[in-house]
Amino acid sequence: MQDQDAAKREIYRQKLRMKKRKRLTALILLAIILFLVVFVLVKLLSWIFAPKYVASANIGPSLPAEGDPIVITTPPVYYDYSVPVPLSALVEDSYFSDVLMIGDARVAGFPLFGYLPKADFLASEGISVDRIKDFDFEVDGTTRTLGEQLLRKPYKAVYIQVGLNELGWENNTAFYKSYSDLVEIIKNAAPGASIYIQGIIPITSGKSGNPNYLTNEKIAESNSLIRQIAEEKKVYYLDVTEGMSNGTGVLLSGYAASNGLSLTREGYNKWIEYLKTHVVDKEKYS
Image (cartoon, rainbow, N blue to C red; front, side):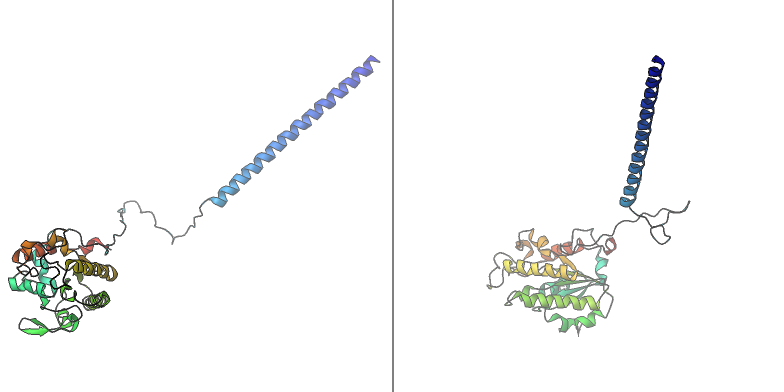
């Protein structure tokens, strides 16, 4: 009887051990399955979110071969036409050999005083911006229009200084349009030339308001329009007022003749100094 009980207990213990082994085996299999599932999910997510690269001989630069020179490229630099031309290195007088100066009585003073003898001039007292394109300028004992003068040589730069005679116009729209049209004409006739449009040089405080439309406030307003034209047409704006007024907006008395409007020799020297130190090096820009 005792032997039968012992045999039963042994069978029961064997069944318990077998159940434990089955549970352990099941847990191990479950752990392996979970590991495989997690592994597959990680790989799948990595593939989904990883950047895709297309291998092609036509996409992307090729690596330089051994011994080839390494070329370092720099990003392009674009000129900001919304700001005045910055200070630059002083240019020589020879720079003006390929320059055309266009303007009113103040520009006519350059050849009158013998300044910038290498430059060409189209200037006339009383000229206004709307008349320049068709006006017959006196040049070397003959007359020439703007178009005829631009055909004579490939100018590297064209400078414009007008606006004083237009201060009495009733509205700014006509001034803006006429000036813009003039710039466009020159751009088309001389595509290789740098075009500099200059702010109107102010007048003395004593002259401002005499006559009533001739004021430095009106000059500043017109200069703001000229600056807008420079940005719109992508030409260079020269803030000559800065150099002639030391930032006050009023022509310094040492640069002004007794009428408060015309320039003295000192005034022309200062103007020339400003022009020679505010030249854009086009090779620096894209």
